[in-house]
Length: 517
Image (cartoon, rainbow, N blue to C red; front, side, top):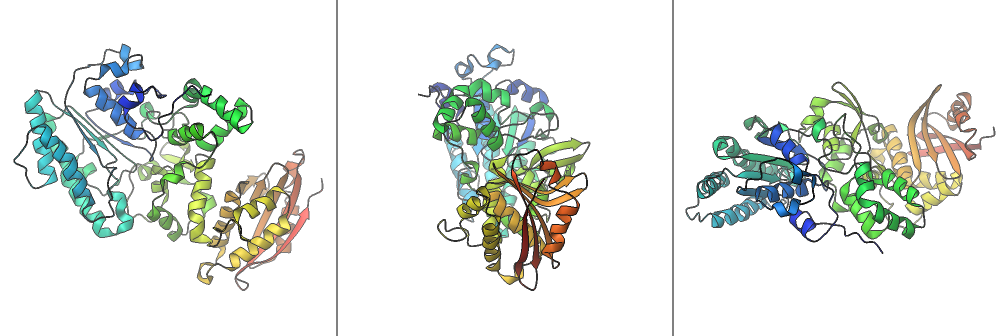
């Protein structure tokens, strides 16, 4: 029986501590935040602990010191003075409605107006916020702390039309402009969100806002390090291992493969996704939990519209300025993919960053979300194009059957989508979702393979040509000895040369050979 309680879906600090749920102590960041600046901004992917961080700050400012007993901050000399808190959570409304933001702000501001007996309401949200800040100061004699959670949620409604986006943008411009005009009455302010949009003027108007998103000192403020996983969750991982009939070491390795890998500053540590870890431990099985919470439709469409080669995302490069602030209408999807958590830092040299998918959950979940846009028809789990059948073909050494199935699948795609990039993306998505370890354009000392797929017993080496011949593709595999480095693997190795043809509208021929040492 697992002695641990996990706060799945609970983002309130007081409830987690009060009811004995596992809490990974992040309290040491509180004095660091105060020392860093008065106005703080933090960007992190959804479901990564931002709301819990702000809830912890709320409890701190509200004087709930008993909740911090035994935590790292309990023994610090930080100022524990109680002060008013104005906590604005923009995560809980349907922003597909034209007036969704107005409805939410009216509800939030109305609660604070009642708290401070404000009866003469002004019409604008910005004016109401100014009045609330002033009343909090005048009523208590102390400057309030302002906490804003998911400031950008109303802006991600871009997929519902530019009119909603523009209206929400204008409202937020005036609303957050209050933080600068009321500076003398504010003790501390922190805003969090998924993305920092460079054309949303809260960042130009509020020019004293310190962005700690890439700051090495705050790299681990959300998410869990390997050490934290071991310190706090070893009992639960032992239970997970028993349920999965694997060893604890194997369970730790699978947790790392599925949910670790996020890096938000060059000198930070790799981090686990808290949401996925908690659900894996609660359900006692590995799954793609982060993607069950939804992916913005406009993001998937943006990726497809830009016709980027999907495998190239692993190892793509970007400048630090491009990653720090994104434009909602930017053609390049890479900065937005980074800020939303689909890509993370692999390495950095100066302002030059190399990115990658953080882990298996993200890469396969991303592929699953994109696949219907590229290759419709994989939804029927009992049909000929079921991903399970592709997975079985790869797992049981049936490359001929796999290629026949792939040929028929691509044939059904509308003609206007057929080109070399489409074929590369389609094959990559199919292999990724089939659960295979796929390396695309993997470099060797004599060249690079188009695709290598590794399973427990087999290795498949592919070379694809476009409007040429399968024989030429196979000859390249042989001549460059792509299989040679697998001589000691103990696995059967298949060499597959294939040709995509514009005339045939798809995969028109292939040759399969089993490699002999």
